[in-house]
Image (tube, rainbow, N blue to C red; front, side, top):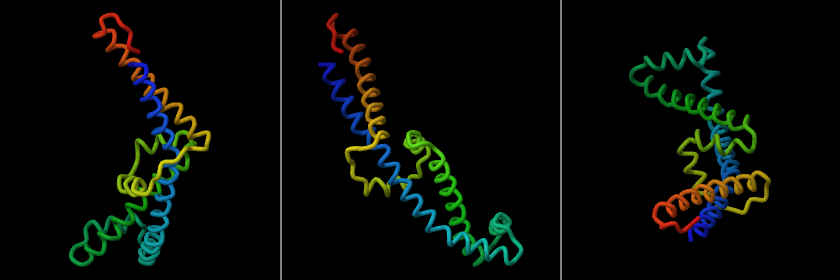
Length: 165
């Protein structure tokens, strides 16, 4: 019974892990769209502040000391600029990684609102790429191997000498 359950868990791991490259691609497309959306705002900010002799950083620093209406206006620009910088750096990190490494990087460094947005639209599909097959094999090996070890240990501990995995 343990071997059967380990095999079923291995299949589940293969199916789940094979979705990683496709999900990552959709995540990157969503991320690129958000960067493209913020770029004109940040470019306008940079152009406006440079007309007054400021760099982006000096303008943002001065925004930190603003009060009243200026503070309210600055908060919007500071949030947009900081988000743009964060998203641009994240996109560069993903773009610079290999196709096989991207899902692993994304698992560690995802941005929650983008992940949720992608997840709402994501439809699992059978991967037709080598990367999907590699992730499927890895997912199978991880869950099958791990559950085989666990079921083997449980069988040895509680099975009275009978082998379960």
